[in-house]
Image (cartoon, rainbow, N blue to C red; front, side, top):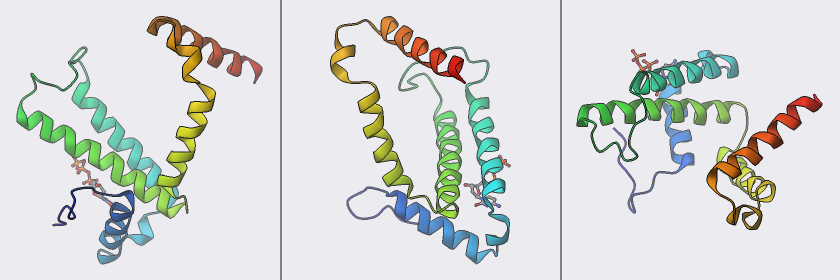
Length: 138
Ligand SMILES: Nc1ccn([C@H]2C[C@H](O)[C@@H](COP(=O)(O)OP(=O)(O)OP(=O)(O)O)O2)c(=O)n1
């Protein structure tokens, strides 16, 4: 099993390399096509959703969940992340860089100043209005 590196942080690059190694050692590169990986990712998102299904709203921090439930949640979150990392790699996308760029775009699209003084529900209203307009244009 891979150890958490000194300093404690796990990088996307490390996960990318470990996934590439994992596939190579099993001769699974042939199955890791973009489409197959996308379908596997969607399947894992389904498994993640099942954990929350029928529970109603859950508290942030999941303080009333059993340890086994939290462990299971960690496993399904990891499957989603690992498939996403692998899909990005196979598509030649640098996921870390792409995510940083997307954060910058998000900050331009939703500048803090214009949202500071409005309540959460107002922000959400503005968001949904903007989105429904975008879809109407199509
Ligand atoms: N062709 C495959 C199959 C699996 N994996 C890796 C990526 C995921 O992290 C994990 C997913 O494994 P499973 O498909 O066995 O899914 P689960 O672990 O969720 O098992 P189950 O569906 O039985 O609950 O294994 C992979 O890289 N390539």
